Length: 198
Image (tube, rainbow, N blue to C red; front, side):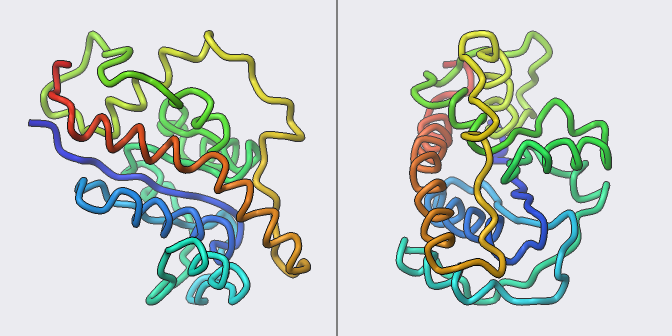
């Protein structure tokens, strides 16, 4: 039986975008056993979630309680089964810090485009083992579909950074995440209930 696995979400300060995504993912994947955490490439370590981001999170059904920002390290990146980043630049920073993460690090929007509607069992790696986590299997499936989708234009790929911006920018951030996260959650929930060899 596959273990559930874990997902790491990365942005810059780890007080706006990544905790917003982390907590919504955690809520959406409740009951699957998949662990979701976050970190920042330039984290405001020790800080709680930004109040404006927390307000959008609660409006979307998430819970900001107990969140504390932390700095991304090579070990944190190495220990993840999947890293989802707010932007493509963050993806490059993760991979520079931990080259091993190249295979399993994606900008959130790009990952959405690869997995939306992906049937469970897609792209099973010939090197897969029963010990591979569900998250790792989904990553393998996503990677196998890279050539099937046109890459988004750069202007459409990044989740906007609302830090120290107006409430409208926080709304834009929440809206962008709201357009892509449900399909990602649905994919993991579907694969979590499928048999490993489906």
